[in-house]
Every structure is written in C-alpha cells, then in structure tokens.
Image 1 (cartoon, rainbow, N blue to C red):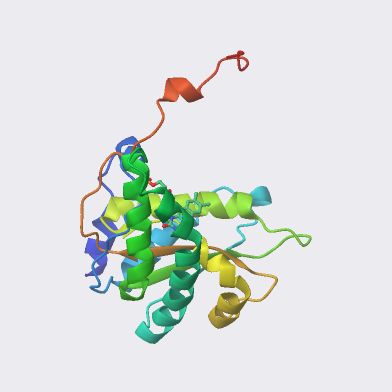
Image 2: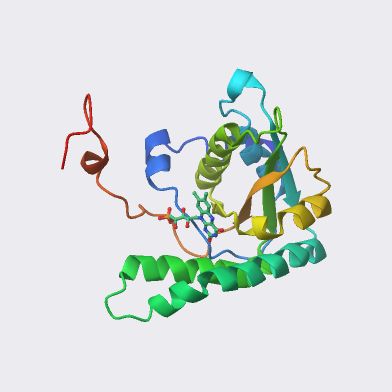
Length: 212
Ligand SMILES: Cc1cc2nc3c(=O)[nH]c(=O)nc-3n(C[C@H](O)[C@H](O)[C@H](O)COP(=O)(O)O)c2cc1C
C-alpha cells in the first residue's frame, strides 16, 4: 500500500454511519495488515480526549507469530474457563439467540487468536497510582472506529488481563504503564452491519429519570 493510498483509505465514510456500523468483528483472515494502516488507526486513537490533555496512551502491536501464540495461549485458557458456564446455559432452548451468537463469536476469536495478524494492546501510564482508563477507552473506541473506516475488523477485549502482569512484562510494560485492552485486528471474513442495540428512547431521559 503506497503512502497516498494509506492517506485516502477510510476518509470517505460518514462519521455517524461509521459509528452505527462499528461492531465486534471476531472472524478475521490471517493475511498480514500493512503497518501503515495500524499506524493510521492508532493515530485516530491519539485524537481522543484525556484529562488535562495528558494523553497517557501507549499502543503495542504484536505481529510476530511466536509472540502472538504466547498471548493467544493465555487468552484461550482464560476464555474457556470464563465461558464454560455460559456455554452450558446456552444449551437451554429459551436462551436468547443473539447472546448465543455473540458467545460463539467470542469463543471463535479465543480459539483463533494466534491466527489474527495484529494483536494491538492499549496501555497507559498511571497518575497518582490510578489507571487513566477514562482516557484510554475513548482512544480505544477511536481505534475501533478507524478500523471500521479503513475496512479492518476489530473488537475490544480484556480477557488477557487474567494474565495481565505476565503479558505486560512480555510487552515491555511496567507496573506504571499497565495494559487495559487487547484489540485483535485483521481483514474481516464477514461484513460490517448494524449491531443489535436497545432503542435510544429506552435510554434517553429528559430532565430526570421518571419512575417506572
Ligand atoms: C470492557 C469490555 C470488555 C470486553 N471484553 C471482551 C473479551 O474479553 N472478549 C470478547 O470477545 N469481547 C469482549 N468485549 C466485547 C463485547 O462482548 C462486545 O462489545 C459486545 O458483544 C457487543 O458486540 P457488537 O458490537 O458486535 O454487538 C468487551 C467489551 C467491553 C466494553
């Protein structure tokens, strides 16, 4: 991909349409993703708001197959333990279909994480001993939106935190700069679409929340 292609890609998608069609894309091709595109989506991340504009974010993109396998092994182990009870519950005939699909997609990601070309970790330095997650999650959402715009599939995950210390050390992150999320990124196998969401009128209140 040449520099002008990188510059142009994703710039045409209307903002609100992009927001409405950004969802967890967990079935990904294993083909490599150009580094310049990862740089572009991380740059979108850097436009997030942060307290005092301190910009505490640190992005670590893991692409080496052996290093991805190290992360994937730990993620899959934790995810299987986490999802086990839900998989059991999902066997019930009245289990909501949308939840079952979501669960199976998350399981698919866990079992194929080693094949995902880019494991993008988001970390950030602490302030007065506290995580600055209020800044990191807006940055993460910007990265997810930028992935949508350039046609990459991505999702927000936190399961690696079960092995957070070990993985952070593996990434060269200290206790002062812990990771808070892992975004597996690659070319999507499926298509983007509008995800299921509660209607806005169920969530929006004027002046105060009235009693039910
Ligand atoms: C804080 C947070 C942690 C999450 N952790 C995981 C995770 O570890 N693994 C995973 O597959 N999805 C994870 N998700 C993604 C949600 O499951 C996903 O956003 C939800 O299923 C909605 O998907 P949709 O946008 O495709 O409808 C996480 C989301 C959030 C906000």
